[in-house]
Image 1 (cartoon, rainbow, N blue to C red):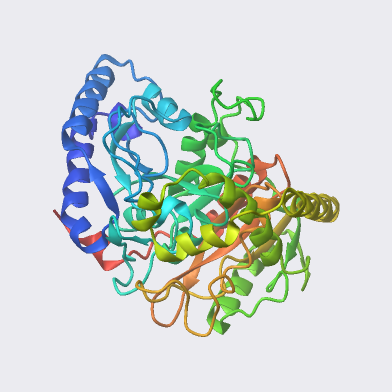
Image 2: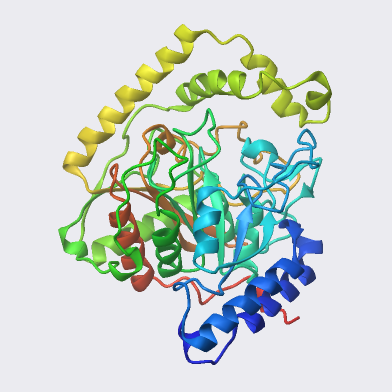
Length: 455
């Protein structure tokens, strides 16, 4: 960090500011389920000493980072937003990306709220309550990484870690007006094993693309506990963001699969797609890329859900979100034939997208059909529970890298994001295209009112 190197700011000062903001704003936002000032200040003091010696562990040394409460953090409980998890456990292990951040000297100061087991697209639980959007406290920040997105948008976390198995990084980033990057499958090592591993990606949620790329360079480092992770690519993503948009062939799909999109969202994302055209990219309208994949996602996750919760006791289920329990009950006894039929359909979709990317380098769509809606609801008025987000889950099925880029505001001042999708294993391309858009259409000039408060 340039400010640390120049001694214009110290890790201790930065951490104190972050903690003051977190403690001051969390009663309204409910973005954090855990804050640990003692641990954060100890890490900040150790980092400050390294910077004073001129021996930082890396570019993230002393940078405050928050972790979504789905990811293991040594010394802190990982309750996954659920009363069904016993907090009285050793909690003696870091997940891979947390271990990498600690090795770099990052100051991990708290855990952000999530929907229960990251299982729905808003963030409210019996354990933690309702998490709220900094742009309008009556509205949801989205889910399941809602706390992470709210924290970044409110000016608390400069960097936050989210998870995404169906849009859980991209949708909250979209609703909160920040940058959210879902890496391609296998790029960031994950542990412990989960039935949802081939859908999930752990990634950065930040204010800028450069910050996301910097974090990504750290959390992609190898970890032997994930036997399915891709071979480590030592590229420093933050140093390789510049690229020539004139070489890109881009498909702009305003509905992707026939989705019904709010007129303001449609207009803002169409205008954003034209930014790439102004940069010299060849942008082509593609009304329909594939058929609606919601039924496939439901069919596939039924088998995964049946397995993931098959050992849960009646006592555990009794304290869980009733909608989630209903999904678990509906998934019971999913057959192997049904599950593997879904896997074969998934393979067909992935092959279809491989062919698609022979013609197009990138795909642009809206992130969701609507802007942020009522914080107490699971769906906006006029849409079914899964109808309002058809754009993100398909690219968990295909394991492609994707991002949400802030691209404008509705008449009510709610952020809207542009969804940018790249081919398998082309994470750098997605970051490069995101950075090119950010340079052409900067998004930091406007911030929610809570982000301007002093503490």
